[in-house]
Amino acid sequence: MSDAAPAAEYRIAAFGEDAGFLIPLRWSLNSDPEMTRRAPVLDRMNRNRVVRIVGWRRCLVCKAPFFSEDVRRNRLCGDPHAIQD
Ligand SMILES: [Zn+2]
Image (cartoon, rainbow, N blue to C red; front, side, top):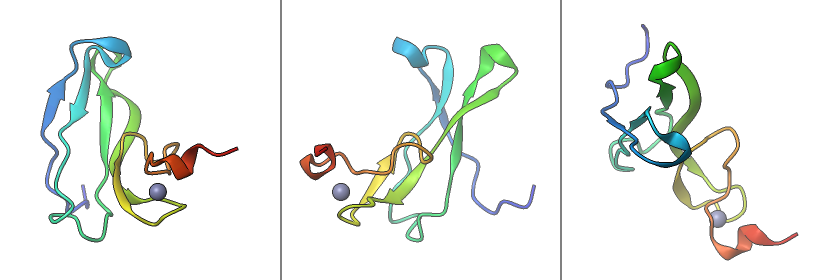
């Protein structure tokens, strides 16, 4: 393991579509100013399969930092500017 980031702390989701998954606890932006840290959501019932990756990233529209629950798919901060077609 060459990743210098500290191991994520996790909670176990109790409800919803994430039930049973290990969910990394959100970390502070101050502790990750470059927004390079990433942590996997793991499905413990399925050999710890990686479900998605969470972490801080910058909104593609307004450039504001936000904590993304899926850094590959969720690239907008959620402000109304993101909901225009
Ligand atoms: Zn935004």
